[in-house]
Length: 448
Image (tube, rainbow, N blue to C red):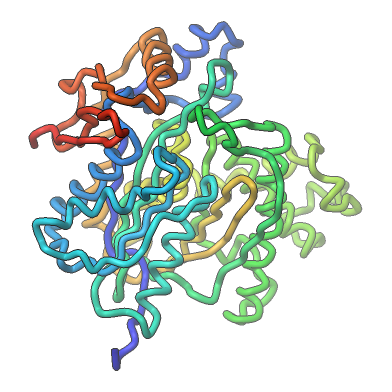
């Protein structure tokens, strides 16, 4: 094309999450753990979940079709569709190809993109790919869709409380209200076994909890520092720090980890400018190296305290979904963006920089940013996030456990008809009808 796209980024978005949730305080009692272990220790209030009627294909179908209807977008206008997920139900066939059934009526089968997988990072990689496609000479003038989401489930035990389910559908194109700041990106990747899924017969991960926490914080250090270097060298920002970011959105395995992540960024600012007035109360940590700081709870608490007010302003508004849905893996950071747009009025966001920290175990991480260059009120109205969260159905921990046992028992089932109650699904939700003898899955949709 002769004219290069400008202000490429997020034009519109919507999110899908299941209609049922379990209360974390009630789950604490049911699990026999100390009061506050999940609600305070993890910072979680509610957890969304789904039964055998929903899988990664169905929740993605729901997210895309609902999005297209809400924004009145034609499937003919989509030239790229990329899916970021780590919820795998087929080792060969991609979720993207399942979504192509939605394009059949339009006759549009010329749609680039495929699935992208690395733990919780796949959604960010998909957004990068989509934005770079629109920004490139390969762009054909059409828009791109990114689907980022997962069903996060864990084996019975304390880790089960850090599950969740959610899928974001994001429209990428030019002249976007959330424009990606292309050169401003810091990435960190390394080989580490902190969270992985080597057992193909189970949807449960293998997790080294303490290592995963440290890996997340190490990734914050490196990706954030690399981002600051880009701010300094490319954007010519003098002595960049959190002061140059208006809002900071994190991947949230649970919200307490986000608190620690933000404090970690403050610690990195301290290491770069230890004599700054903001750090007068933490001078005792001047000689602590980065490697020595991991696992130092005194240091961690000190920087949580120092950054508390800034966290409340820049990050707290992005945690609405994470606190009330749980971990959505690849969708998590984008549910953070959705929460921020829902909680902060459009006029207050104008001209502001929204930075994201995306982390996927294994590990892959990036810190990058969008600049708000247009009205976001339509996105907020269309998502109607807070209202939809309030309308969900609460179920007992005992029923939640029954559903988790059903999912475990029927994982990779063949020649199977799900037993979940379709009447409990929200209007417009796609659901699994059956799996035949060749593992082919058929879906239907709850009428609007």
